[in-house]
Image (cartoon, rainbow, N blue to C red):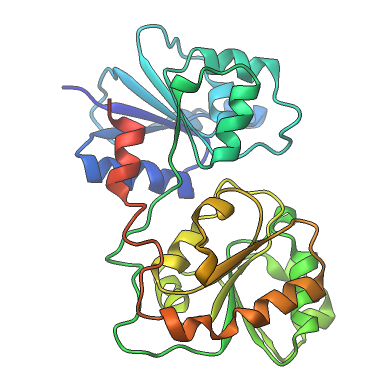
Amino acid sequence: MTEVRILTSHLGWILEAFAKESANAVGEQIRFKRIPTRRREFLNPSNWRVHDAPELSPKKVLFLHHETLLRNKQELLGLDARVLLTHFEDDNHISPELLFKLEEISRIVVQNEGMLNLLIRHGIAPSKIRVGYGAVDRAVYHPQKVRASQEFVLVVGDCKPRKNPELISKVILENLNRKFIIHGLHWSKYLSKEVLNSPNLKLINFSKARNPLLMRQARLLLSLSIKEGGPIPVLEALASGTPVLATNTGFCKEVIPSAYGAVIPLNSNPKEVSVIMNSLWKKKDECWSKDLLSDKFTWLELGMLLYGN
């Protein structure tokens, strides 16, 4: 009996969902093991527990994220070792240690062409790299069957500095005639009191169950991140028939159709964002019943890249 061992630094992480859903799609048996990423976590034996039983000897291992690979102490010789890379915090400084470990890996799956080209520039063999953008479950994320769009701009995801909360704040204040819904955690830590008290903003704690309906109902998804591998909400919105305005990071330029969205420079200012946002406002009227990804980006496609030959 064989299995794929999934090595991760986080449990309940979006990349864990990548591993689970794509394994289900291709009928692969997987088992998770958490590799602590902080020294104090190494001292806690519970952080080394293996999830799901029984213990088996894997012939294939999949590392979720490069930090997990860097922390690995397991001998990889004789194993089909793979890694899923999303993004680096600094593309100009990839550590020699990581490049050395990537040489031991048999397959590297990245989320966008930019990451592929970056690794090739650092000497990684192109034959080892595959691009797997991510996936969308069409039973969950799909266009409306009956038109019921609402007049709001949607921002999705938990806030951190790379989500560009400063620019999003300015766009909200620049467009007091537009309603904004932010669906995620921690935004109140980054937004000013002026923005938090603005009548055109509603903050909602992230709910996996609520997210599909918001995606279908929104006029537009706004994603202004500074650094991303994806972001996955872009795929979810497009599959739901919702146009997207995003900064040029991750896979946005590769997946957003120009007819129903726009990709803008990272250094765009609030007025520029607002002009393009308003130019896209009526696009929802044309595409509310369409899967704007044309049924592409499935879990089966991703599963073949992560686990297939």
